[in-house]
Length: 254
Image 1 (cartoon, one colour):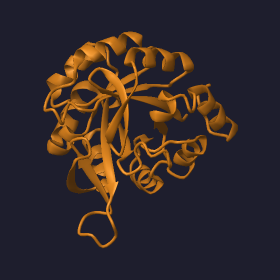
Image 2 (tube, one colour):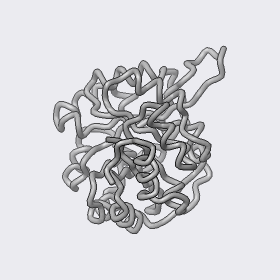
Image 3 (cartoon, rainbow, N blue to C red):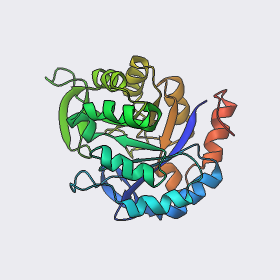
Image 4 (cartoon, rainbow, N blue to C red):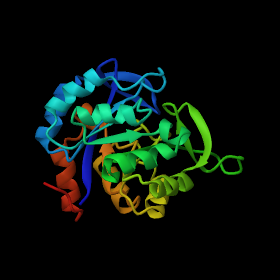
């Protein structure tokens, strides 16, 4: 069953949305957004404290606490999670899953440790990627960290296989190039990762119309689709997205 997941990118206590990880604009209040999305039938909620790593701090727990109270569906939190203690603090607040990105790249054994301690179903590895031109010395699909500002030289598919072997329960895959453009998910990247691993892959970055969600599942082989701008600014509603997918023969929870 394919999941439809709204994403709350949080900065300074507000939901924001940018393009290619920059030029952020205010979208709405996180508690109000979480309440509305749960009511409309979101399968899960993702909450990303997008400035935490860049600002060199942990996740703002007071923001998480407020949204957790409003959320009636499984709730994933990422951004600024550096170690097991940070994860425990979030799980103690009632968070269902944690999502790690930069910390996983810098210290891959954290994935194994978290998976052993909390169960793999609670450990999401977020992978942000960008495309490099053919002929460059870098991988065609490269992992980026620190809010997309730092290249790693890691090949996305190789990294995805590694995080699976270390015990990640799922992968949240975001294309920096497609993020906020509304021109569609990066299907090449999504398909490459989804076909390389057995764990679920959530497609993220670039949803602009209903067809894009369908393409992510059918061409990109994603198990879930994550959207931000189209939901925040009322261009597509969650019921509309689910009805569209169901009418196309995709199994969703209506």
